[in-house]
Amino acid sequence: MPTSPKKIRFAVAAPGISSFEAPFFRLCAQVEEWEFKVFYCGPVENKPYSNEYQTNVSWGVDLLGDYSSLYVEERKKLCDILQDWRPDVVLVYGYGWPGALSLILRNRLRGLPQIHRGTLNYFLDPRRGWKGRLMRPLRDFLFRLFTAHHYGGDYSRKVLLDAGVKPESLFFMPYSVDSSYFAAQADGATQREGATAMRRALGWTDNDQVLLFIAHHTWVKGPDIMLDIFERWGRENPQARLLMAGSGPMTEDLKRLAAARLAPKQYHFAGFVPSAETAPYYLAADLVVCASRYETWARMINEAMLCRRPCLINSRVAAAGGLVEDDRNGYVVPSPDVEPDAAAYVAILRKHFAKTPDERQKMGEAARERAKYFSYEAHMDDAKAAARYALARGKRR
Image (cartoon, rainbow, N blue to C red; front, side):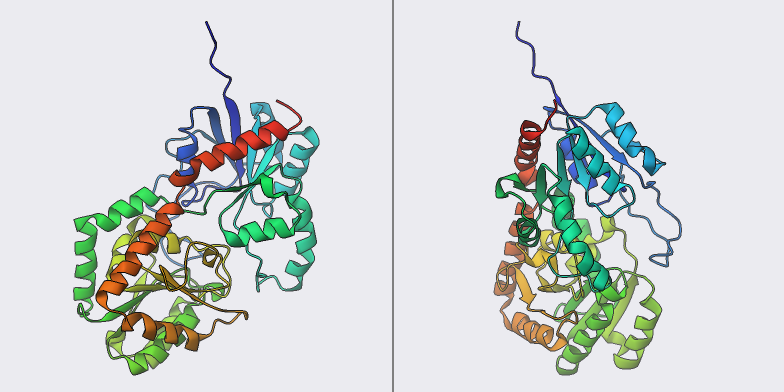
């Protein structure tokens, strides 16, 4: 009687569990040819108060459900604990967290096939300055220590190819979210009714033109740029409205600026919104705006597009590399400089709201379709192919 083929022992090594990546882990646990386990070093907890967001925080989702995982409290033990599990292939998340470099080097020395997964942008992070430039050659060297790579868009593919990585070792595995959840939320009557009630409570009509900014209120996310964009647009458009979701160290200053520069009916600060509860905010908006000075991706763009909301972003945002297609399912403002051009954003706002309702609805449908393509579910065959490729080229089995 023939025996079934031995399962591939597939491990993930990560600094923590992201609410965006947990849906991918759940899908990996369903792959019949894998025995799957996640090893992570950052504790998973919903803190009642977050210094980072400066408010109470709960992500509203179960980050550890439906897949096997192990929390490794002492990072220096990660290599040995992972080795004791005897994986055939290991997927390593990024390279910049404490213990990652040691893990990558030891995997390489042991001949353990390893796959790299991490968001990448060829624009320099302005927060890192000269240190970022010095690290680029080291980053390129690290990439070549991996057997295979996931890339999530055009930007990350270019970064890897420029580093000398073999094209055949690259496998498209998008940077995504729980796509089925957000699509279902967007189609649900409860969420649509919630969005309508939100606008009514704010005194905003169906004819008002609502922009949504939803991000951490920090310098790199550009909430101050968003206020500048909206102030310019609001001067010429009495129907302009701004919904500011999120929180952070800049929130109180932003509120003071808004109070000084905008009419009270024009804007609303919604505060921190758990990811699982964001759908009504997308549905209450007509267009979602990302004014970041730098991004390795920006998953809220996936969420918005799954809710049929086009996004207006700039070219320093990595989601411009394949997810947002200019003037088809959203808009991309060229931004060669760190400071995005507020005037260029306003020009796009004029263009978008000059379209007919049918044209804007068509753009929203195109956004949904593109976001569905950028889903984990659509590319699990690529994830399996990356594992097989790495295993075939590793030195051990």
